[in-house]
Image 1 (tube, rainbow, N blue to C red):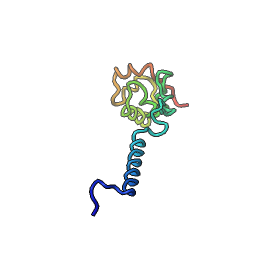
Image 2: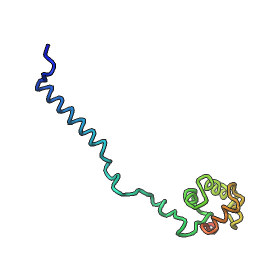
Image 3: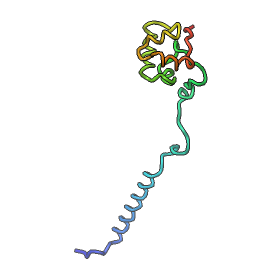
Image 4: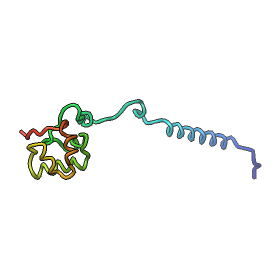
Length: 121
């Protein structure tokens, strides 16, 4: 039996290798993955094009995602608009939107400057 406090050469090498391994794990854990955290923002082309402030959106041709990007319309209301349009055909006048569940006078007033109602050609 050997005395405590005495470490063999093999044990010293194993301890050193363990320390190097643990330090390398710490470095890998603390560093961000490549391309992340370098001041870049990842966006999709659809998000950039869906800015309602640039031009009015045609409610009769817009997708749910495009409608969701309009101020005053969320994902649920966007789905209702598309569903209503599929069942009843294109909207002919702004007031037709009042028939969609969730659109009242206040919402319609918000939407007037952001949407248009051109028929599908």
